[in-house]
Length: 337
Ligand code: UD1
Image (cartoon, rainbow, N blue to C red):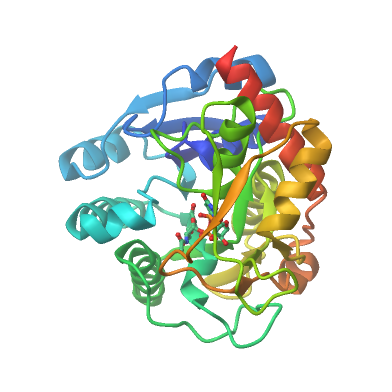
């Protein structure tokens, strides 16, 4: 079965391509290489023994999307990762985010819903919950006003999918990720942040490697155990496997609603200081850090209730925080060698 993975050379996309190929799917990876490298294809091949088909397409180009679907009208499903994801950049350049994250989705849906079956897995985010009132967060928690254009594109993306599914053959699973980290245990693929990393774990691994002087911990006066923010860090390989299961659910028509939503996390919250300590333990390296003022837009605490994904999808995160941090460290060392 032919599956399209947009953003297939990106961080979560590439790990999902690996899991799809391991399950025997034929994958076409689409990417515009704006935040990824063509060499990722070789890493995927070294892990799975197979290079996925690759199309260098920018999904903002409507004609290119139309052309692709015309040539590939036997697609069984699309997993749509391609999107920009830097919160700060989205505040600086909102139109880039609305164009990139929403036009691409619209063009894909226009073509996909012309096929006999239209199955879509959509990358959403726990950012849609904002600061939820109750922990752990369930899928029916209130959607809060978005705190950034990036977050807004995830909310609008979900709404577009609900509206389209009402009046077309579209079936979709929206996966709300908590904090994806780590790398493939083989260290053949991983996260490749451009420039200075904005996310915690790549900043930690680069600091431990000596590329950055020290980590800035954004605030230690939050109402948490140690004063730092709490997040639910999930290994990217666990996340990738959930995509394959969600896709199989659509392909086997097991979904109970046209659009279903699942949280993807471990169910456990870790503070910034706990992540640093766990990293130091698995790597044997010190992470110099300094506490600085809070980062605007950060929520205090966010971790998932994963009952729905556990019970309905039959999926559960297998890797620990230490596994994930160890794999991120192995990858950082490999990339710099
Ligand atoms: C961020 C986005 C989220 C997005 C996700 C995608 C914000 C507010 N949220 O999640 O919407 O879906 O990235 O990648 O940007 N931290 C430090 N020092 C650092 C970096 C981070 O102390 O140098 C802290 C943060 O304050 C936070 C935690 O580490 O408490 C995790 O931060 P990060 O990795 O950026 O993820 P989120 O902010 O949770």
